[in-house]
Length: 238
Length: 322
Image (cartoon, rainbow over all chains, first blue to last red; front, side, top):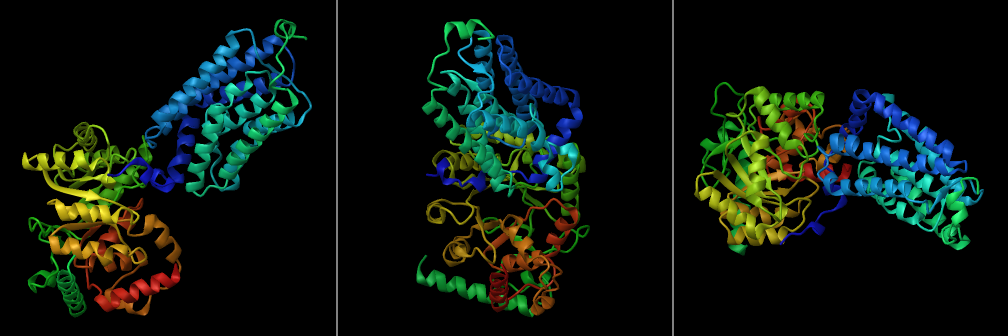
């Protein structure tokens, strides 16, 4: 008689904020070198994203593939999955994102990172900077220990937020393929945080809306409809 | 439920309440009185004297307060938090508690209970209560649940939130008939699907049902609890504190004057007394992360219980404050 739609959002949340934030504490202290490396990878990728260059594009995509792989295996599987039965259903999404970044890195690039000076670029840069620099310290405002900081490249929320920013900093007809997984994660995470009474849920939702809005603007302005020329794809300086 | 049944239940309820007031004497006297309440005093001299309630289908007595694991015991592989949960279980057993409830839905809670039972060597103390929660293979899930608890056989298994009930309930009955399970039940929560649950109660020989009930969520008082009493089905109460939000909102508020008669020290105890004083209720299962709260909850199963009038007062006072 009963089916899954009988459940409300609150029914499906089965852990407390105390336990949730302890996940980051144990992960950060156990895997501190990998966690720090992931942040460095994010900083390198953000520096490259603001410059033009063929190699830079590929390095960004490889770094993003690596941090998504680590985030999926390290955080989601090793730490989050034991307290959240839904993770095995979400993990394939992370795998898909890794594959997409890897495919984009391996093939002649149908997209290119770089500063365009439009609204999407500003929003993209803001999201990347927020995910890398500001997000880890949000917990301090709410009285949590710094050791529980959620860091880009390891914790899923800042990784998804930052990735949205990276995608907005790129142009090309296939850019949209990289958006669904981080967008869906942000929506799911916003719901989780909302049920846990965490204000940061609003940030996650706001990021979703602004990304979708910028995507629509870019569509109108040709950023995602104008094909890259063969010369642009071949020549990093083009 | 017929009008006659309802009247009979209300009469029993009133008698029980009256006894509680007279017996401001404490729980032990309840059984001796032969009143409709299915309760008696603790038998194990080594344990504190706590109110026991009978499981109607067998007459077996269990302590009137249990321990839930929803959210509180889902701590993953964090050993520090696992040890804290074991401390909660230790305090619960020392205070005379027995029933611990969990579900495959509760993340790592089953593993944590298994860890605690091992750490405390308490497999013989626990009244193990879990659920089957799948629209797939129930037998597989029960086997996994058993591994996680590290028990060979459960005392009670329930169909969680009626999920897959057409397959899972017959499975549980077959297990019971084969001597692999002692009791069978069905659960719901948040006041949902009450009509569906009552249809199952009417048509199946259930030992237990589990429902949400507290001084604010009283929907079950109208029909479900009288029906359970009438049909001899034990009632486990989940969300007695509304997942903690009820006691949080009452925190800092002074207890009402009449609470002194009940010898309660906290709102949590007052709420639990409100619940276990109901003749149809067998065992509320509050969850906690603090050993002191586990002991405090168990202490609600000692001393006098409120009568019907006082129960209404409790519901009224809490209704105003939250």
